[in-house]
Length: 226
Image (cartoon, rainbow, N blue to C red; front, side, top):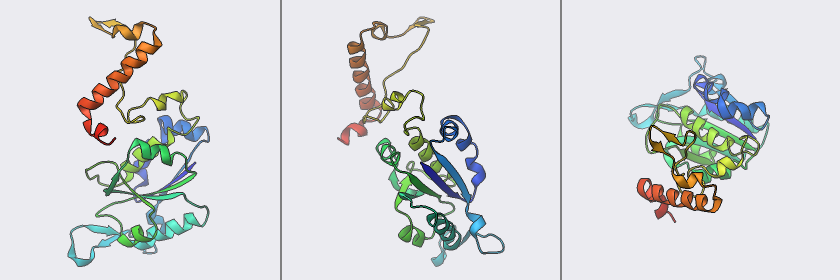
């Protein structure tokens, strides 16, 4: 898989893309992640990427020209399965979407800034719009990192234990059950005995029941979606 991220602040993405699972995936050659500075494609001598909004609205708007130039430059080299725009006024990203997008070959992610991009970019180039929650961030970089991480970890071979991703929260529409490790008794705080029984059938039943109970208590809305 290849992921191209378009941003005016590439420095913000250096950390997230250079450590942990994303670093491992890149070193294994399972994913290519390329960060592109939109300013490099501006034809303005000041490398401008924003201007005032028509109509006198507050805030600045990202210009069409540098974004379009970069998009066209990348599209001339390969076909993209999706061109994603990170914006708070969109459908909220979820695990089901991450599973679906992990099967694509080429993704482009545009990070919004200021009051957003000129609507004509959204109308003519964007194929998917994604939010990471009902709140506003300074820019789309951190959101793009979240989406990228959630996709890449699902690519076969990225995780050392591929079954691990299958038991994550939201993978089956429920939250994950509690997890424990050694010691079995710490300051009198004991691990549930069922987990020490060695009875796989009963352990799985316990985990399923715990997942259902936690989901019902913490995120009942997930159950309502069914």
